[in-house]
Amino acid sequence: METLFLQDLIKVFIESISTERGYSPETCRAYGADLTSFAGHVMENRAGEPDKQNVTPVGDVDSLMIRQYLGVMHKKYNKTTIARKLSALRSFFRYLVRFGILRENPVESILTPKQAKTIPVYLPVDDMFLLLDSIDTETLSGLRNLAIFETLYSCGVRISELAGMNVHDIDFAAGMVRVLGKGNKQRMVPIGKKAIAVVQAYRQKLQEQSGIARDRNTPLFLNKNGGRLTSRSMARILDQAARSCGIPVPVSPHALRHTFATHMLNAGADLRVVQELLGHVSLSTTQKYTHVSIDKLMEIYDKTHPRR
Image 1: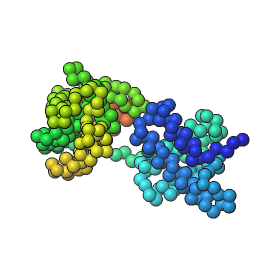
Image 2: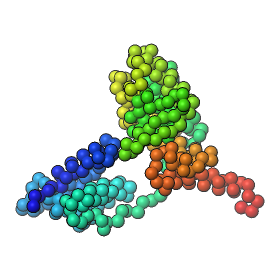
Image 3: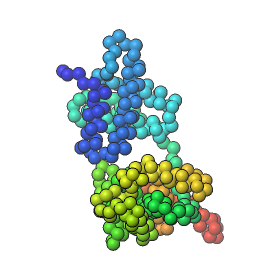
Image 4: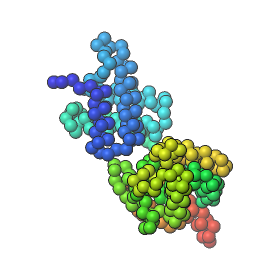
């Protein structure tokens, strides 16, 4: 029987989740990094073996190797990172079992570290408005940046979803945005009038200053060279803007997504509606935002109930 090596199968797996399951490039890179890290750990621990090669037969990997790897990870990373790395291993070996490459999944018996429940970082309404009102819209880049922040806050989309948008994904007349989410799943979400107005102003100024036509197939947000603005650049721009206006907590694009969900729920939006807008498969993923609404309810209760 042909010997199949761990390192080669990792490449096959990454290609599979990219082409067959439609995982985003960011997700594929994260899986690849986690699996390559594990393969490197295995190679280091085989260094003393006389028949050691530069590759590892996948059949040599057992649950003991994985437990040793997790033990090393516990010294370097928090539980959330460890759980992510274990999830990558679980998916990889499940793939190998499904296609008959392995008979048993060596990760099957290993439990995921229990996660501490964390409260999502979000901005109060006043801080959110402070951020939006602080942007200088006299410049093209400032107008673009405000359009990015307004769209993130208005739609609650992931930063990768926003970075991948083209002009034609926004129906300006209907006030709707087509979003390509995880697993290449499409959803339609509303976009507010303020966000639409800023996006249109940005595209108009872009055409006037750079001569770039309002082609509906072009990327929605462009960098200074006329290429698609990356999600990493958007995150850096947001962080700089938040620092400049004096917001005391780190602000990431995901924090604006949390802010969108929190403000919607606090205003009385139905949890399942918010789930649909965020593109969550499971309602339990959306429920992490309800703590804020509960805190608000308790505050009102304490202030108003006669026998609190």
